[in-house]
Length: 79
Image (cartoon, rainbow, N blue to C red; front, side):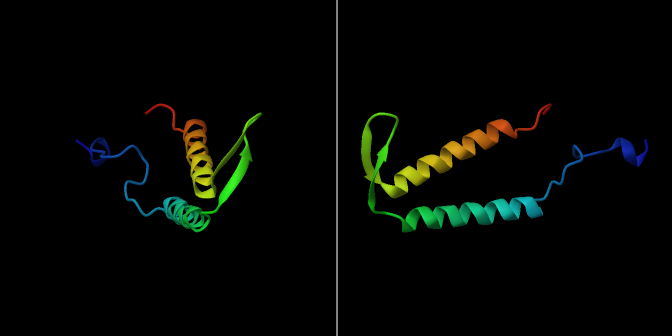
């Protein structure tokens, strides 16, 4: 059996701290800090009704929607 026959991965980096993951981690921390600092109430128009809510909850909702959209659009095919 040759060494090439015994592969443990799929060709991707198995360790956590890749440069892309570090950048994404730093951005997530910055977004969380930004959300926590903005706590005042705001009025937001959602199509027709106006909603008054804390700014942190609106920012958190947009962040989660963005994570969901990004995860859906950039998911890896063929797993």
